[in-house]
Length: 468
Ligand code: ZN
Image 1 (tube, rainbow, N blue to C red):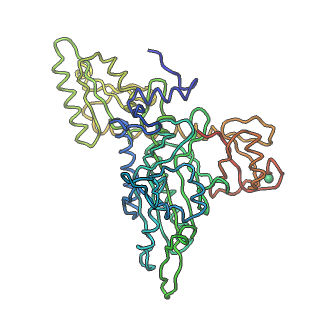
Image 2 (image 1 turned 180 degrees about the horizontal axis):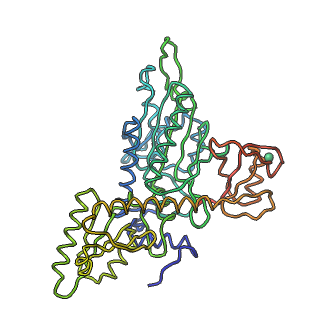
Image 3 (image 1 turned 120 degrees about the vertical axis):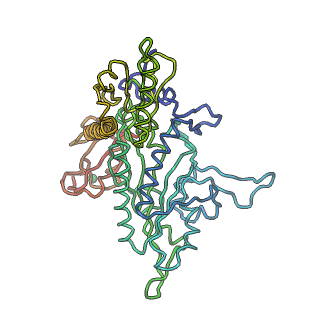
């Protein structure tokens, strides 16, 4: 079998891996609306479970809003509608009747939620209001679609909050960064927080922080965003509350969103020429046990493999004993494609020595774990894999950024440079390098450089890259 090399042709490699690992089926007869097949959906559900865990832990309530939004509500915030107008799907008929008010399939849920928030938020004691949902959103993508990365029906997470003032909303943004970091550790995904430019921020936002990771082909992939809205939405949607002294104020709002792109990032960042490499916290199966049969002893080995499986399962691990009637080599191959983090092999020699042989998917390391130490040894091995995957991915991410001093320097992958923050200089930079200006590091001031276009001194460093 000929494998596509990740380093040589990332794009084809990615499509090939998605197909061979059976993560998604894109043959559904609507382009960009793919079927979540069982294995891919298990990965997504695992990620969703961490999102729920984190959001619940921080006092958010899960809700579920209708998919359809009346045009009248959708158009209340002018910037917002401008930003989404060209990429929404419309429902124009109900049966044979043309609708008086057309309906939008949600591209995101501000305009679905905020008319309701206006009813829910009455007094300062109703604040903060913190809700989230995990739903499908729809956007008419005109660029070439790609599983998990650029699709038209998107599995989406969004949290929406309302606060008494700008400061309390800002505290929420800071909390979102902590939530994000805890989730990213589990996915072993490195990221940058870049405050988007004024012309690239979310339509209607006061500011947007993009969450970007770097893909092996040098492109930047936005995997989420966090927005501070001030009162930009609460005014048109009339989300106001009675203050302690009887006055009325508009609520300050924030949102935090991520999508199935997280799956795309996990595939792209960690995978190799043999297939997926899944972080242990995300893998539908964390350990696969493969009995190595010997003539006349097949049953003994099989029984021992099942015992090991049961022991690991009872300490909460996701385990499978592969007892298919196939050669061990072809079983190894199958589970490597699917990225199972740890393979345990058990043969007669292992049994006699009181050990089980292991092979790590992430770095190919092999060794043995004593059977008397099985549970502890396996759990700590999985933790080590997660640690090493994080370290390796972060090192690569940091290494993907190159500093440039002038517009004449050749464009590399992600560029970092002095930028005064002015739009006119920003656009010169984008044109000259043929890259997208992603923004400036969130909250990191300090190093002063001159803008590579106009020469003005600035504390912020611009980042630019080609986007996926
Ligand atoms: Zn400038």
